Image 1 (cartoon, rainbow, N blue to C red):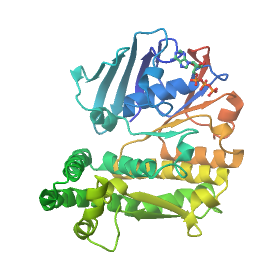
Image 2 (tube, rainbow, N blue to C red):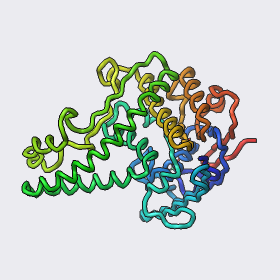
Image 3 (spheres, rainbow, N blue to C red):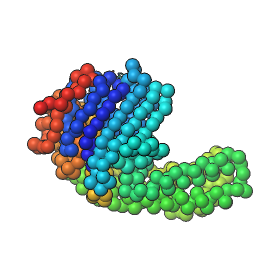
Image 4 (cartoon, protein in one colour):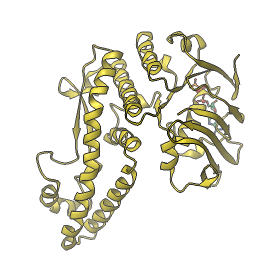
Length: 360
Ligand SMILES: Nc1ncnc2c1ncn2[C@@H]1O[C@H](COP(=O)(O)OP(=O)(O)OP(=O)(O)O)[C@@H](O)[C@H]1O
């Protein structure tokens, strides 16, 4: 599933560039501020329609550009070949195309680009909000269950309508809305449960390979009292929901609880250990995706040397190698990039003041 060709223009400090990345590992090195992360960011924007560094895409567009253009040629053994084009104008207009035809949904581009990101913000997954961990589970479900996005949209619509009824205090209509809400909530819940059942053993395997001394458990909380039926919970909480004007329970409140000795892992583990757990989550997710879809994940790995020590970097790179997937990995120091890899099929790129060159 590699990116065969990548064209970027109008992104941060980067000079317009066209590269033909390796289908294996792509090492990108350069000084602080040279533009390494911006290359990963451009790929992430194409895959997810958002950046991992800022919530506002206008910050990704070069100060002196009036447009940001991203183009990728993708080759997928199962899906065939595809050209994705994304054009964003300074005013905010966005045009996304696949093989020249306009796409109305970012999800379609995302299906072509199963991208996993490991960068400093990713390492906050453990300590961050439950929403981040919900999104983590949903990435796994989305990339395997193609109907999931529509089911998720249906659920969001049901939730919005139920909340509108709650805000209007129209309690006589609630039982009508509850039926649809429960039905779509249980569909989402089932997908997540099934996914985590398959995910857990893979996560344990990867975590052991990264660091056998770190022991954590994953527990799924569906977003309501797990010993009760959701319909009963809604009835029980109706008065409070009406007072608050929103629905307190449901899949929008689900949580992946990551624990160590029955305590939240973020409270117990060292920062380095937390990073190891997050890396294991990310690698296990990509690995499971590959097993279940027979497609390849694309890994964007930023500045690993400043996040993990050599032993853990070595273990992580070995796992990525075993996945035989396409990797874009950055570092300030060329030696720190390559020293933890076995001889591997790769290309090396150097970035200097936003200009990218491929090394022979
Ligand atoms: N919108 C923008 N337009 C132009 N330049 C920008 C914009 N936003 C950021 N920059 C500059 O672009 C560069 C972006 O650097 P980037 O974060 O990609 O570098 P890096 O090589 O990953 O650095 P580090 O090693 O410090 O993480 C910085 O020099 C920054 O000042």
